[in-house]
Image 1: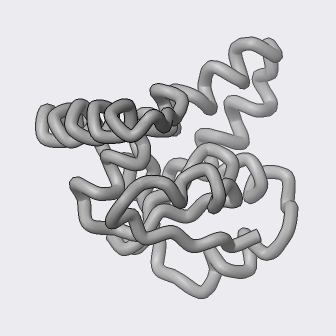
Image 2 (image 1 turned 30 degrees about the vertical axis):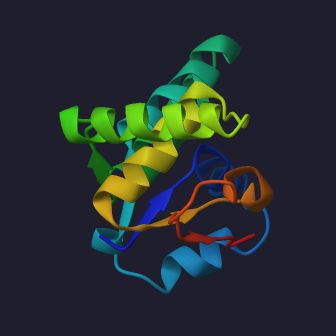
Length: 130
């Protein structure tokens, strides 16, 4: 796996927004991962809307990609990252900090349209496929 998708990247892919789907086609499914945290955010959105169609779209999107469990190593990295950001007077929403920490722990590139949002995370490699 080389890339970990942020929640907005999956949303853009599902809506056909920007160049996300074209970029996806340039990579093997095994190169693309989605954190369990991202899946949780996406499922929340689908349940909130009461949308079976959105759940089916998510199922289809997630089937070929690597879904990565948020394990104890990622949890430790999150704790370190959140404390570091707080000590600098900066914050990220909890889910975003968890996704950033997950990407750092895995040593992969975070694919997000929120580049400025994640740019404050030292050592995090980011790309925008939109």
